[in-house]
Length: 465
Image (cartoon, rainbow, N blue to C red; front, side, top):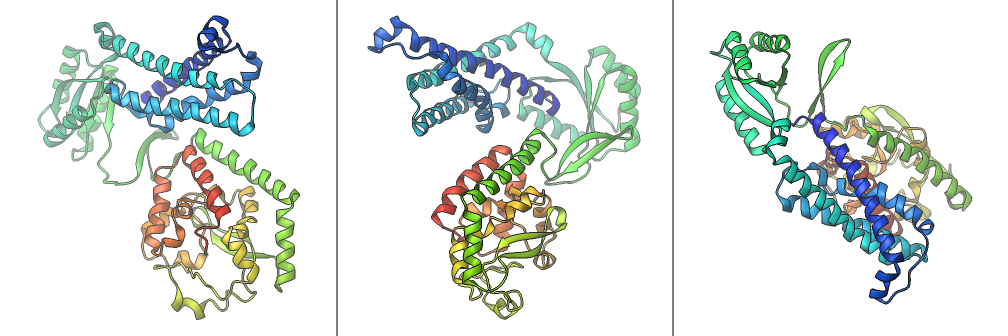
């Protein structure tokens, strides 16, 4: 199934599931307020729905997102039941635990039994929906409507590879009714096959075929009014994902090894801006930032802030701000300490750096020196989560061009490297590997998880240098 089709199907399922979660919450509430049911449990009916309204909205909106995080919507539609059962069970369990923990944390006087029943009922209802859809789509009528007939076109060995991949994937919507070898099948014979078999579309694998022959096949499909799916794997990319688009009316293939523009990207931008703004206001009012600035000023001669040119997205230089934790001539004396560098590669790291001031050690331990970078986030130069920005001179010393891919996204305040025992990592290649792992698997959910894991690490003061 094409990605566009999968996306539409996922959105439909998420909407259906949200409705079922809403219904499950209402049923759980009705059971808790029913006198006869409560008499069985030896309890009294409890509360009105108004007290549950915000929990209801939270449960309905977050439940599909939690299922998404568990890979629930990434499975094949008619996958084995165990592939459906466990992600759904974990998702419903996480939503239920999240609601119960929220009630305890906020000391809310709301019937917690409603949350437990909500988790059980929602699991039963969503799983029942999956079973009903399974029965419906296995019927002859649904198979006739849902399955689409295709002809495979390509060179001999490409046809074998494509046939094997389709069989392994088990795509329920594709039925291969014929094959045609580009090297010995004429366009006229292909058109005759389309007529005889009432074909929906043609899947063309052109990895080693002549473009002229492929063009003739596509033109024939155009005249016949059937879809032509061109598998454009004639370029040997390993990481980049190909997407189709249009430029000035011309078909376009886009090869991208970074996250593409999406609603999650927009949500990340909003989270960065409003999160940085809220933290800056809060830390100024409390007042953490003014106190740190005062401590630096009275304990060490020199400016409060340290400014340095760093490499931003795609290597674009920007001025990074930090609270100064070193003596004023720290950059000039850096060369004298190069022999003590504890990090393999172009990056300089030293645990007991003699240039660090007394207050600087404390600021670094709890990452408080990074707070001014919230201003960089507010300016759009950085993100709350992303690879840490490196000085320009360290970027110039990259000995592997693949390391530059860590510059393909905005740098951040925190990242996988910082929550994965950064004080134990002594090889820059491992640092880059974690950054690229973040880029390749990026999602808004991953950002939220990293932010949540960063909080206890900052408060405990572990991992800082």
